Each structure stands twice: as structure tokens, then as C-alpha cells.
Amino acid sequence: MIISILFKKITDRYLIAVLLLSLPLYFFGQAEQHYSLFKPVPKEQMREMETDRPDVTESPYTVDAGHLQYETDVLRLIKDRSELKETTTLLVNQANIKLGLTQNTALQVGFQTYGRQKEKELSGESSVTEGFGDVTVRLKQNIIGNDKGDFVMAVIPYIKFPTSQFEDSRFEGGLIVPMLYKLPGEWNLGFQVEVDRLKDKDLPEMHTELLQTLTLSHSLLKGMDGIAETYYTYDFKAHELTNYINAAVQVEVAKDFKLDAGINCGLQHHSEKHFFLGASYRH
Image (cartoon, rainbow, N blue to C red):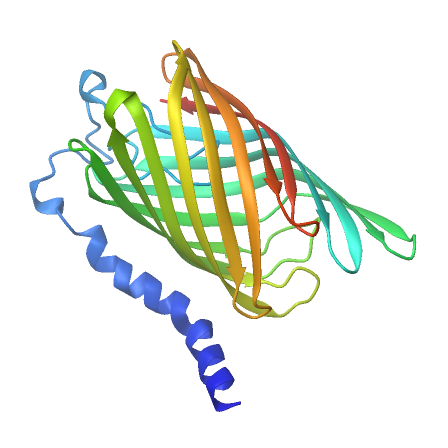
């Protein structure tokens, strides 16, 4: 009992600690940076466009200082089943706006423009809700490899605000640590460690969850990349491990404009299945 109380107190407060510990990272390496939000990087000096989508593994690269990047699920269909109900959710324009503050720091604001959720109880009763979704604020800080090297790493603390009109939500947050290693032959190996404080699926209580990913990407054709990913989540409260696989393609339609499509499936019968079509644009 004492151990469980202590664990709850620690997890209830860890989000504050995450944000406080991340502040020094914001200033890490800023002294030598020349460009900023108000002095954008010239277009000819910008890095190649990198996106946080379509896989779960985030990109450790940041948007160039003074530039804007828009990434979105144009459409995402989510099917979920629990011990109490079946849920089908349709999201339209689940977007992430990324703004380069410095050469190694970017502010991100995510939002769900429209969501429609249908819940069907196992007894047969059903209900439909719809409207605007949650808003998420993130700060991505690159630690190493943003401009050179084969290894890239960043940290991303985030907070989600419960603004949803179509589902019961609460304040959530966590810390994401994405990494990338450039392999020979233009192969990219990505991996990510993430700790989150999340709302329980069918209850208003909270739990702590660990997520770890492994993703491999390579060019299939000129301007087209293939992505294969596996990851798992572990719920410390329910002591539940869930495994997922993810497959997607991303096509560069024009310079600084990409489209993607894919599927994300949980291997257990109770886990979510996602089907999505997305786009990314950099200005």
C-alpha cells in the first residue's frame, strides 16, 4: 500500500519535473546560433524537409528557424474494442503546426479540427458525439545531429489540454525522446522512448504508460519512401503490454509538400487499429 501511494504521488508530479528539467535544454547550444524566429534561415540553407509522420516514431530533426511546417491526418479512422464497448472514431484534419524558434528548437501545436465518435455498448446501446478535439502543445529540442552526423536525438515534452467535444478527456502529458541512426545504403533506423501520463480508456482515472518504438525506412522509388515500424506500450497500472505494427508510404509530390497513407494495427484483440491519409507542407 505504501509503495503504491508513493508511486502515485511520483507519477502525478512527474509532468512538472519533466518541464522543469527540459528548460535547460532549451538554452543548450543557443549561444552560437545565428538564426531565430525573427531572422529566418535563408531558403538555400534550409535542411531537407523531415516530418514527424506517418509513423509513431517522431523525427528528431527540428524545423529551421523562422519557418513553419504543417502536418496533418487529412482523414484517420480508428477502431477500438474494450471489455465494455466498441468505439469507432473518424478524425478530419488532425493537425500539427510546427514553428522553428531557433536552429535547434521548435514549438508545436496540435489540434483535432473535427472528430466523430460512435460508441456501441456490448448490451447493444449506441451513442454518437462529434465536434472539435483536444489541443496539444509540444516543445522539440534537438540535442545532437540536427545539421550533421549519422546519429540524431531530440527531447519533446508535451501537454494535452482537454478541449474535446466528442470524447471524455483529461489533462495529459509526457516526455518523448526520438532518435535516428543513418545506416549505409540510405536506410534509416529510428527508435523512440516515451513516458506518458494518460487517462484510462473507460474510466476518469489516470495511469502511467511506457512506449518504445523501432522503425525502418528506405526509398522505394524516386520521391517515395516506405516505412515499417513496430512498437509496444506498457500500462503500469493495469500491467498490460500491447504490441503494434505500422506500415506506410510517403510520397514527395513537390518540393516541401508530401502525402502519406498507411495502417497501424494492434496485435491484441483489444488494441486499436488506425487507417490514415496524411499530408505535410513546409513554408
